[in-house]
Image: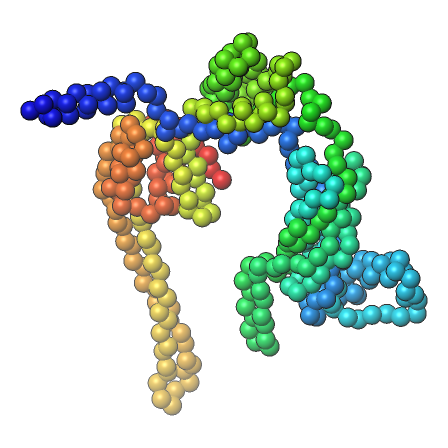
Length: 372
């Protein structure tokens, strides 16, 4: 009897504890929902040559810039190219792109992407020769070189060919060495600017509140301010180290909030419905109309020993079929009910797209409809 009473008291306390605690179903760390403005990437670009291809490179007649680049490279290496013309197809001109990571120091490495400029059919097995990568300011920040990794492949014969993936683009893992660091220093900043990856006023205000609660306990004063739906500015306390401050702030947990959205991709038939999407009570009827036209021409032969000619008499058969004419009532107060209501109609994804567009036009979809 005593054990039953203790069990009942324990269950009541557990229920009270569960109701008192906030729900963290949509909670996330600040580092997962926001990025540091001073810690953004910088794009680099360069022009280079890939050598060592097995006859799948640029044809020098169709891509004259490839031949010019080859001659310039050989001349820089002290090799004279006057009076000769090459017809080999083992070289390809490429554009080299990369993202310079934030706070990158000289000597560290990063991946680069190469993309063909000419009429090369495949970059598989090639090697990127030394290529300088420049930023938007024209300064050289990195130098890339190395073997190219291509995920796709291509095989062809005289009457057939097979291609999977893209063979004219690839990557050079850790192929670039950073030679110059960015002029700005993280330690020189007087504040931290957090940029939300999904702008939202509610989430921005909650981030500021969470940071201020932390700062009130640690420094005795609020330090965060929500400027708009995307930016939260954090002032650096005088006694704080900026790196440690950012490390403490980025691990704080915030309850995120997002507007209700329905994302539709008509090309692939993909439908993504957010958790807060609701549909007012509405009746939906979806019917598929199929019209099939069949041509069955008949050959009419003339009688024997007559002057008639063979003729073709056209014959067309048209059939009309209609299915799925049931009427369903949709009332989606939550995501589970909405999906169950759409599945009860028994339509394919393209039909669901049409239904959602119709519900939005009727004013019953309480969400933003994004069509891609």
